[in-house]
Image (tube, rainbow, N blue to C red; front, side, top):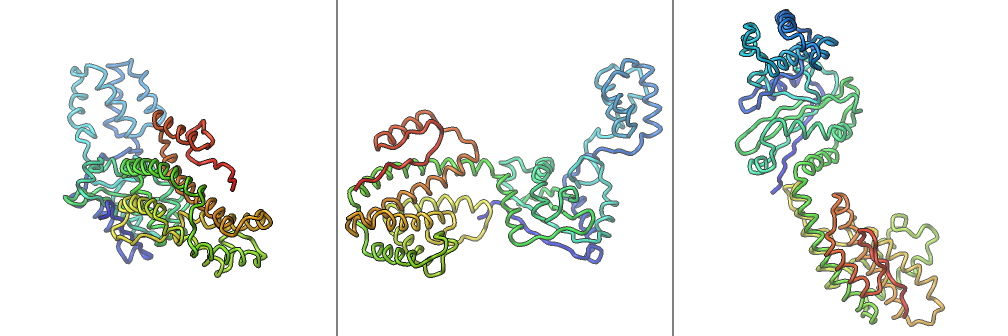
Amino acid sequence: MAKIFFTSNYYKNPAKANTGRLLRYIGTRESVEKLPTGIDHSPSTVRQQRLIAEVLKSFPHSREYVEYKNYESDSTKSNATNFINAVIERNDVSRLDKLVSYIAERPGVEKIGSHGLFSQTDDKIDLDAVAEEVNNHNGIVFTHIISLRREDAERLGYNNAQAWKDLVRRNVTELAEAHSINLSNLQWYAGFHNKDHHPHIHLVVYSKDGKQGWITKKTIEDMRRLFAGDIFRNEQYKLFQMETQQRDMVKERVKDLIEDVFSMYPVSLEIYSLFETLQHQLKNHSGKKVYGYLPKEIKETVNQIVAEFAKDEDVAELYAVWNKINREKLSLYYEKKEPDIPLELNKEFRSLKNDIIRAAVQMDNYMVNSGYSTEQKVCFLFTNVFRAFLKSFQNNYNKHANRLGRQIDKKLMSAIEAKKAAHGLKLDKGVTYDYNEPTITM
């Protein structure tokens, strides 16, 4: 079952769809968490100005407060409130009746506003004005719902508006990119609804000038991955740790597999035949000998070779574990369970196909006059390609582990280096897990 639910919609004619009403719904419905009113940049009130004048008479030293300097340079309601609050917190104000009265009535005493709408800044949001703006917008308005299960929201701290606000704000660059809107032209609003079973936010996105913005199935999936990857970062880290453990198991198997290869590991007749076919096809191909540039019939031969390698018991076991971990990762994003992709169709291991092609070319170039038997030549191919597969496998793990900056335990590192030394492999000074293979002698 997916852990994050992400649905998207859009309105080409906001006025006809009455999207302004949607904004009011997002900001005021029963389960919404109402927020502080935000930073009010409007001019300070007459009452605030009079009160500040009396404060300065009673507490002249308060002129040195940073809050007063801010108010002096920009006399807004917000700066006036900040200065008065600073005076209240740092002085005995009991003798100043008007200030005592203000304490009971001051803005923010209950940190509750009239609505729950939030955006990229903490500036005050006028719900009616925003609703009118969206309703009269001359471009496309996009709406999204991002939802979690209650147990995940509680466990990960996404049971309050602030957490969701921070989530959207730190991913705003990617959000703009997903909507094909320049960051400077992006406008968004959201509201958190603390529903019993599925706490969620409604997210409204549009371009300020109305000229930009579109989404596709791919960008919707990109956004799902973006938010899921952020929310479930710790879960992903645990999966990467599991991958690390599996990588250690791969290394244990590498020892036996390399020994098998050097002892003339038996190659199936099918692989034997396919490599002969591939060599013949590559000889007659005048273009680039890279998988992506090859004609369909040569690609099919390469795919068949990968499929044959996948039948090997050890390769099949390694790949099965990779698929298991991959399924757990995908479960963070998707509800639907897809069958495992055959190795020859898995883009994560596409580099293996070019390794097969290079090995076939190398064998043809360097071993044609060597005097080796055909069986030895094919075994040479199997050695290089199989090692390439293992290296590709390890690189896949390294990519995820290095992304998190994982530090390898010294004891584990020593054990890895000992294993490498035992097999004549080059020792690494840094945290690297690619094998530097020895030269093959046959």
